[in-house]
Image 1 (cartoon, rainbow, N blue to C red):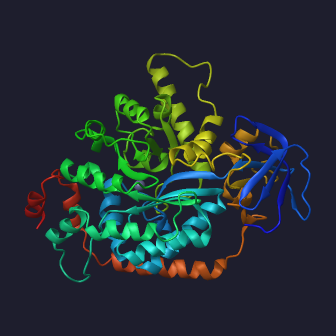
Image 2: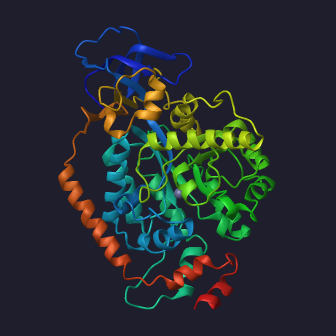
Image 3: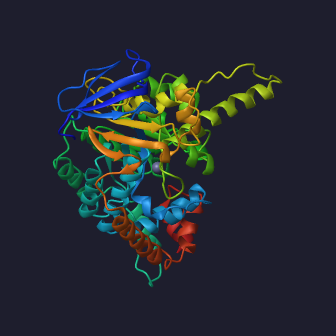
Length: 488
Ligand SMILES: [Zn+2]
């Protein structure tokens, strides 16, 4: 954080706080790591640094409720992947070759990418914990960047490969689908004790295995252990389109008393209306990731359906190996996908709607205060409110793609991109100023990231994929013995 008070002058403020509303030319005073005041023509405290924001829009730092940050150095490998391709290549091969240095680089530069785009909080569903050192590197990457949110320690076992040797399918299955190893629970506790406080900007969570691909008795056992650890949030991939069809997990969880507000379900397009209502009634949250859901057949992005059911809906970016790590794209995609969905229903009824019923502001809410609610941190972030963390993004409206700025909400959602983000404060610290990230040596980081990318890709390319493909495309998810016999 800054030593001096910091006063943002004259911005078009979209506070997302109903008590404050929008201010056409508002001031925001930051002291320490918090917002001290918001209003018109605030007095500058002695020694304050003043930023003229007359041509800028101020929004709360965005809250990305689902990202696998470690994949930063694999940009564009997933461009044409299905969910099956992703499982085969990313989850069964690439992840195996990450060393702690690669994890630090992926998480550090991924967090910087988020901050550069005005995202100040992220839920990192971190399934790259191949050892305790990997977990340490992942957290350190976030801390070194200064991002907040929830670090969710992954329970998933990545496969071990021996390049040049034939694939041992029994070993592969045992590693990826076996019970969670005890060391993970112990290590997660160790890590939590290492600087994660209940009131910090970066909190401790857990990320489970893929529950739709495991027998329910194992799912239940894992979830009970995870709940007993009382993490800030439990991040779970679920409701992934047709995969949810024969697996009514929500009803199992309901019957076994496993649903509460710590549950953060990711995707959810395959959930029925009744399941969405059950989740909403139990205070659970959903992170919709429209880009990957639309590409990878995970059902229609569910955020608005869940919000209509009274649930805590939020947005996530998911995999930066597939798409850019900014919230502008996801807001636009989610809003327009839902408008298209409603219009398609109307068209089917032979109607042309006379009005657009879903307003743009609703998606900005989901990306800010909605995300904060989803992660249980709306008391300290998600809106520009006195007393909350000073997580602020200033979007410059002077660029050719932003001029003239008539409606700030429309400008942010339909016109802005990360290059328009001029200034970002994260917990009161200026991490971007004048369009540039502060305090980093980008050429040096870039060199290291490219070297890491080359290292992982060159190892992954040596793994024959046939058996792994057969493993994941066979229809016997729950019968491991049959899987081994079929593929070996
Ligand atoms: Zn995911």
